[in-house]
Length: 417
Image (cartoon, rainbow, N blue to C red; front, side):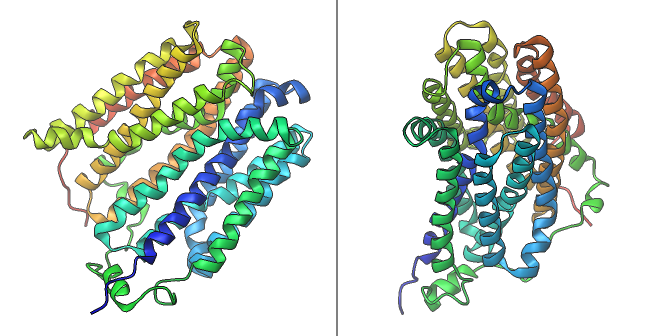
């Protein structure tokens, strides 16, 4: 009997790299915001409007991409998603007005909205249930790598290859290079010539015929536990805010330009990556010590919530690296919180309901982000500092923890009929 081939891990590598460039494309405008605001005279509310356009398209795109993927297939839908967001990213180089940038962000959000639904679908097709969490963790690390590389690479491109337009064009071209590899090397497992019979059998090991069937969102609204989880979606806007506004914070607070805030931002992203890897293991550590499930999960998330509080002090310090440490701690805590809360969803709901709960929560977080971005723009326009905004960001996690604890006094499995 032959050994199973390991081609599924090549597919996982493709997902990792596309998630890396996906997050880099998303961050370019935020990194260039201080310079472009001076060049084009943007107000804070105008930049917030660009972020709102991106978030709106991202939310709507995620809502409809599953049906689009079922219609034309995984390979074609993922390819079209990447092609569309690549061209959208490059189109920023042609923009000169607020309306133009809003249109480019709308297109980019629509294209990028297909990335994670498609990647998760690919993992479902290519990996047995026992390996899916590992594969998902690997490709999701790509978003952290993108956040680390972008603030280091974008300044180099801008200063050595023709200005701010070059950053959008260069990274958009990287997407197209990935697309060529995707079209050449990806096929469904049953069509791939690089998969032997043993690996094909392994991929389908332990998969029940109805294992992936999702529940309608409306059915989940009957359960208090679902609403308790949805209440924690107020943290989604905080995470998106860090991605869109941190470069501007370091510029306004410490007068760092594009050539100097790269390292602090990379440090924050590296901290988030470490939090993503290690944060979820905190509750597992408590469980190994014999703690009850409810106490272990809630203690872990409470610790994460406490670790976000120091970010409130970031506008009051004189050292950019101390501020970066506060943001790094908050980012790591957010990732630890997220890893734990995704696990809590699986603790409470049956497997067939998990995707629906998390999916609706993600869409809700995107819509809440639009309102928060509107608030950010108006607060910055009026106050000129991040003090109020970061007070909200730092305290939001304790508020979310309290709401979830009230909604779910005891974490336990429920039956969804």
